[in-house]
Amino acid sequence: MDPHRENGAHGPVSKKARRSSSITFEEIQEEFSHHERNVARINNGSFGSCPGSVLAAQREWQMLFLSQPDDFYFNRLQPALLESRSVIKSIINAADVDEVSLVDNATTAAAIVLQKVSWAFSEGTFSRGDAVLMLHYAYGAVKKSIQAYVSRAGGHVIEVPLPFPVSSDAEIIDEFKKALSLGKAGGRKVRLAVIDHITSMPSVVIPVKELTRICREEGVDQVFVDAAHAIGNVKIDVQDIGADFYTSNLHKWFFCPPSVAFLYCRKSQVSDDMHHPVVSHEYGNGLAIESGWIGTRDYSAQLVVPEVIRFINRFEGGIEGIRCRNHKKVIEMGKMLALSWGTRLGSPPEMCSSMVMVGLPGCLKVYNDKDALRLRKYLREFHNVEVPIYCCKQLTDGEVERISSSVITGYARISYQVYNVVEDYERLKKAIDDIITGEFHARLLPVTD
Image 1 (cartoon, one colour):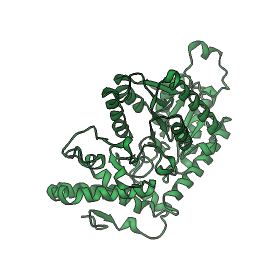
Image 2 (cartoon, one colour):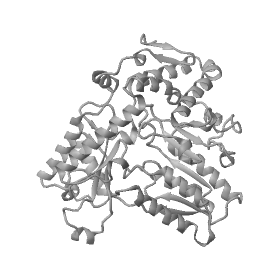
Image 3 (tube, rainbow, N blue to C red):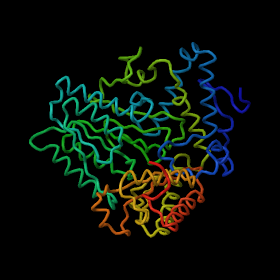
Image 4 (cartoon, rainbow, N blue to C red):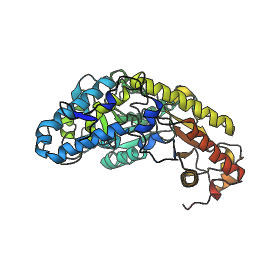
């Protein structure tokens, strides 16, 4: 047993994480000392990060199960899951802990919501041709889930073509209203709207409360907010937002180990008869209980939420303090890069979270997704910089020949988390500058596709 740990009512508690004094820079670096050294890790948005004290608590939970599985299953698992759900309920302002389920990730949560929509089509509650609305920049896995569950069941899918770069919420709201009108054309019903809280790529904070209100006014049956990046990144009040379903990963910006997410289902007739797609012994006992036992597996990532809170509370202002500081720093770093490269941010600061889209110099010639991946790989393999690259328009050969080298076609999505330092972003700046100085561009970089 780790001498720095002790057991609480339901599991391990870190003495280290309960320190009352504010965490120091050195302690932050120690918490994330398992990160690969000499790598500028400015892509927290993709996979998140987990501090050492939380990883140690996870390991204790795993050993509790392995040392005496019967006791763990009958006496510890469900109370500990309830404690984690209660913490999330408080953070997101859910009305009841039964509205909060813990699942593997936001993709699983989407499958749960879309599975019920699929049943509604197959059972005749919805009619063939009824519409489901989603943003054009919806996460790729969610788009595939809509294809698998909705299109195959006879639903009509409409994508909202969002602008990027974007300068205001009004642009998004206007496009959403147009798409909603198209969905309702000819008397068709819009059964579900899938709305991102923060789009992944490009990364933009979406006015979900306003879009949910519009859906209610226009008679959309259900609203599902895919907020994979939200908790720990933007403020969440699910009652104020008013959606039927809301999900967010806890391993991205909330410091949990991978992988765990919550799914909020507002108590109403809409959320009745929700089920986990993996059916086990708890089927029929409510989604939260079903999700709490889908067979023998490692539940430890779902059990460390209280330990995460203890880690977060070592920071001034807790989760809100972390969120505000991360936002301020990523905007500062984004502006520094854009000024150096003579480019701009892809959206104003108020539409950014702890991630910012920074325009890359046009001379890098990022003209399609393949170019973007090649540049990303080069930065990782030759400069030890982890950062996603986005191509905002797929250009044809003819368009490539005509486009000016001053036009911004590529963006870097930079993240800022508590472990990041200014030098991480200066390394990205230098890497891009070196590419330009060497008269390379995305299509000439020495990497294999």
